[in-house]
Length: 241
Length: 52
Image 1 (cartoon, each protein chain N blue to C red):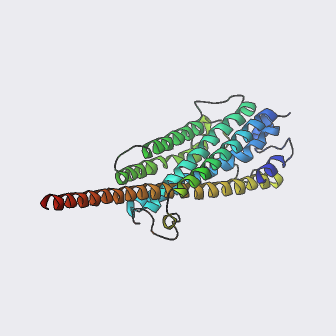
Image 2 (cartoon, rainbow over the protein chains, first blue to last red):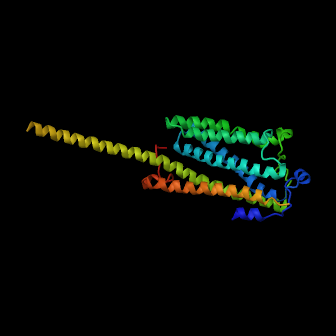
Image 3 (cartoon, helix red, strand yellow):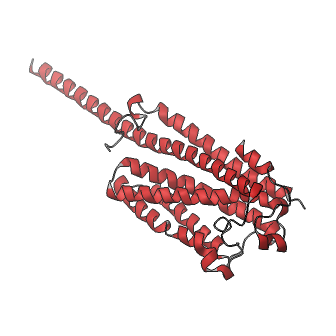
């Protein structure tokens, strides 16, 4: 409902940035930014949480941190993929291109996505779960270093990007545009929280199910062993008689 | 000037992807929950699998 509200709010010719507005006029396309920008910020939040949880994995070495890191990485990767897709769709009418390989922010975001995709691939490998968790935590801590590059790239390499410089920091938007963007942040923040909770639950249940199945297999094996021992001892008794 | 096609594609892909992902998460959670004893389902109530 909040998404629909964010979509219909604002006038069709509202412009989010003076330069872009004067030169191109975003018109309706600006409505895509109410989902694209919040998705990007929530991607930072999810990957930041993954980094904190990964530190927890390395320091505390408990399953809670491990499941949290995995959940945040997966949800963050979904969000990051959507950032790239919505940005590309927004770029076509506004920049007249789907993708620009020379754009620093696009490339650093793509690198971020690929690194966390690699993190998730690493989590699916077989082997000792504890060492795999530690390796994945190190990968996450390295990958998260890309976030400041993504965020600051428009300031540090302003001539090598199509993106405008920071809009929110300088409060270049106001009134209904600002309100709608804030609504987008609220909406996407709630979606992120919900997804994180449910992904955490799934991760926790996966561990519990594996633990339970191993425990059940041990009990079954012990039962088989004791049954075989009973039969053998009965057989020996009958042989003696 | 309108960009309805781009808007529908952008919002549709976002909401659709998040919706499908959320649905699959809930379904996976329910399937897994049926395979785990009650005592191990909630991480708030016990130490869970593998100690903690």
